[in-house]
Image (cartoon, rainbow, N blue to C red):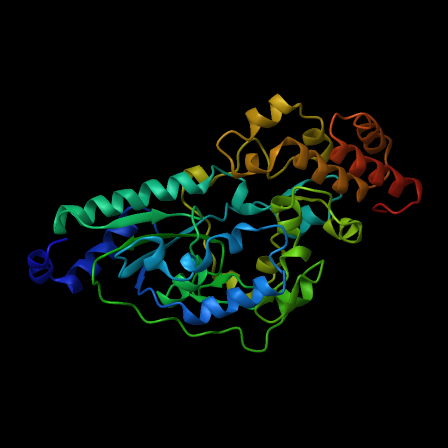
Length: 361
């Protein structure tokens, strides 16, 4: 953007317009902040130094680009941070699903269409609206697609605070939302960070099945069920398998118990509605999917990224935690000769667990 254009633009009014346009595009909140992330950088480096990122080597791959936005996108002065609610209508208690060993639990964010493309397209439209006012300017849109510290950025932009479970919490909307960013070279006025309101509450720490929240605001990803079922590509450590229960893709326990989520609204976004009945499906049904069925039924879904082998691996573990019925044993036995050694190993663990009477009762 030229210096002349910079001096003729009312950036305070533009920021108001950006918030209005953002809401018209389906974002529930829009905030603006700068690129200073020193505190977040120190926390990240300490986390990586403790190896708490597990096999997510990409967390350390890009050096300081993750915590210094101007190195990722030259010229960046401000970051427009947005959030979009994703929680589907709750037709039944999420606890009821987790307590039913026949059912499969899929993290609520993954029940609908993959949010990455949807939100990135909306951010591109927001950039186009800005361009209609200021002319050509420097920007780049991100939705969990590059080395971006989305939660610290959102916190600085006033969208909420990072809770003890390390997720972002908003005092009027809970935490069931996605985040996205628009890096810009515009000198927009900034929002104030939100105050932290976790207080003495430890509900998220206490409920975590694998004790992954090792201290307030400290998560060891290597213990987290979301990491184990989504990010990890090898064998799930045996010590965690019984604790996974029937969670076959991700985990929402820490959000489910957060008191602030009593304010969370269901999403009005049609693309986030559950697809292929994944919110009500049974373990045996999805374990019987062929690879072609898996690819078809997860088309356009975030689930597809884990691949068919990890999908079967996760369900085998869940079936090992289910009741030892004839149907469960039969389903596992049919996979004993699966082409994947990874799948076979988890199937044998599940069958062995039932032989020892270790499944659900």
